[in-house]
Structures are given as structure tokens and as C-alpha cells.
Image (cartoon, rainbow, N blue to C red; front, side):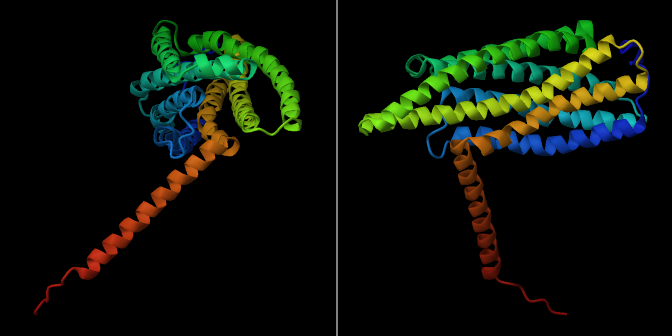
Length: 321
């Protein structure tokens, strides 16, 4: 049924609604993910250069693709659709950027899940073996797969590719998440008892350092669980809608168009939410954000004051009538 609606025009209010939402999401997604990349790049407190934050930046880059390419193209295509203008020129790049970024996001979340599992379950091996160079290799493989796999879209079409994607990448991430979540929670509970023992024993400098490191890993893991929860809240409804679109034989074309735009918006929303999770849950990111924004504000204030001072000292020529 969904394929037979490809040449049927979507309702005008739906097109404008999706276009407005896409534009609003772009205004949130771009600055939010950009400041994540800047925070790790500048690293004002030298606390963000870790394998975990490397994958976070990789995820932020994927989300930037959504904010800078997919969402503006979506807004343009849907506004043109609302005005009954031609949109075919924008559909292919919109779909390709959408599928590339979705694949990269899902694979990065799988890598982050594995990172947290190893960090909590095997902390000593994690610090020794899991370096940023290995994270770089994994990130490169993620982008290689993300760039190559979506070319399947040209052979099977958007709906079939979305259906396959929902049944493979998203389902695989969900299985990995459930498996590692149970194992990680068990490992964290075991570590909590060890921390209590360490607190009750001699408060040596070595014990205090271990407690600080363990507390940091715990905060990072909890923040990641929240981020993954938001991801699943956006992707699971989208996957359910994809199933309905592909399997519903009694749905009319208006319903199919509504479902298409809803599943699209759900996925786009995930890219806008992630930076707020970092700012909310991770103290290191929160401090870096504040430092960067404060420095930016001071720079703008100094620039404004300098311009005003230059204007005050600039000699004025007299005009004679």
C-alpha cells in the first residue's frame, strides 16, 4: 500500500507542519551538536579526551549532518510540496543524508554501549587497552559502513530500505543494549560494595583516586543510559510506524503520508536531544560548555567596547553649507 502512494500528493497542512518542525529542529540540532564538538576539540579543562568522548563527538558529527543537511532539505522539500512545486531534486539528497546519519548514529551508539560495558565490567583492561587510537579506527569503520550501506536505497527505495534498517541495525542495537545493560548493572552493583569497603578502610591517596575514577565512570555510564533511553524513545516508535506502513493493507494514502512524516520526525528529534543529555548529566561537558559560552560572551563584549572606543576617538569632519 505504501509504494502505491508514492505518486499521491500529501495533504497541504501535513507538508507545512513537517517543514516547520524540520526547520525548528535544525535550529536546535546545529548549535547543540556544534558546541559538543567544540567542547571536546578545545577541552578547556583537559578532561574530555577519552575514547568515550571520541565516540560522543562521532555521534555529534552524525547529528550535525542531520541538522545541517537533512533537516534544511526536509524543510525546503516539504514547503515546496505544500505549495505544489517540484521536489524530486531534493528528495534523493535528503534521503541519502538521512540514511547515512541514521546508520552512523546507530553504529556509534553500539560502540558507546560496548565502551561502557568494558569500562564498568573490566576497568583495568579498559584503561590499558582501549586507547583513542583504537577508537579512531572503530570510528573510521563506522563511517565507512555508514557511507556504503545506504547506497542500497537506490535499488530498493526509501521504504524498503527503512524496513530493512529497522529490522537489522536498530534491532541489533536494541539487543546489544539489553544484553550490556543487564551485565553493566550487575557490575556496577558489585563495584558499589567495593567502594563502600574502600571508604570504610584507610583513606589513602590511592583509595581516594580510585574512588574518584570509579565515580566518574559511574556518572558517564548513567548519562549514556539516559542518552540511549532517549534514542530508543525516538527510534522504537519510528520502527513501529515503518512496520505499519509496509504491512498495513487497509491504510489510505493520507494515513501513509502522516506515518511517513511522523517516523521521519521521530528520528530527527533524536539528533536534537543528545547535546542536552551531555549538558544535563555529565559535569565535565557542563563545565566545558559554560567555559566556552562565557569566553564567547566576554570576547563579544570586548569587541563591542573596542568598536565604541574607536568611534569615540575617530575625528569628525565638519560640513559647511
